Amino acid sequence: MRGADNHQLLSAFLDVLRYERQLARSTITTYQRLLEAHLDELEQPLNEVDQETLQRLLNRAHQCGMKSRTLNQHRAAWRGLYGWLCERGYMATDPAEALVLPKQRDKPLLKALSPDAIANLLRPPPDDEPLDLRDHAILELFYSSGLRLAELAALDASIAGKTSAAIRGKGDKTRNIYIGQAANQALARWLKVREGWLAPERAESALFISQRGTRLTHRGIQQAIVRYGKKFLPDQPLHPHMLRHSFAGHVLQSSQNIRAVQELLGHSSLNTTQIYTHLDFQHLSQVYDQSHPRARAKIKKK
Image (tube, rainbow, N blue to C red):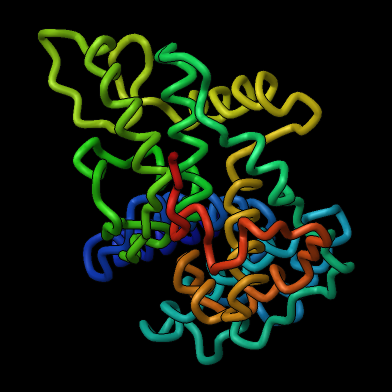
């Protein structure tokens, strides 16, 4: 019953994560998926696994094309499991503690939009067509605040009109985001037509909704960005992270303050933020002469 013993230990470990450590549901789900796959690869009981076996599995996954981020997730899951086994006395030494990630090839530079492309993309729509107003507001908010896709999808309409707000982001961590003037203007235009999509019998708190009156899904937001981009920036494929990259790159180039960018993006490690130091925009226009011009510059009307 060797396999059953392994799965019983895994089940007990997941219960610890769930009830004692109270990790986020998404984290537990990820650990469960990775560790169940790990059990399928093992040919011995968990408490007989050594570091050489784990390192060989990690190296093989790398040779099969697994990216460094996923490899790191596997290593973190293994460290959690085997560390717990050691704490409970099932093992004398932790075979995952000294695992080394296989060396990765140089990462490709992040793709980001130039300031001129951003200026063209984020010009207000010429009419009050609700779909364009919603999608324009989505793009403005992505670029204004450096949000992740899941973070934007979770926003409620109560955020409109605020210049800053506390949100719960990746890893269930709370951080402050900042909402610029241009983004708030776009949100105000969207909220004027949003009610037309709400079902009378349904109360919906979501900031961005579908034409059925329900919270816009991650897929719906991605489709909105692609649709809007084809209409207003047809030569540039768009995705949510491209706007986040653009936000980070432009703020970093203007401010030269990588620590501030780290906090704005919600990165737990400065190493993650440092990739933005490689973004080189040769045509930074005078409009972007502050840390985030769309957030700070006054819009002059005469």
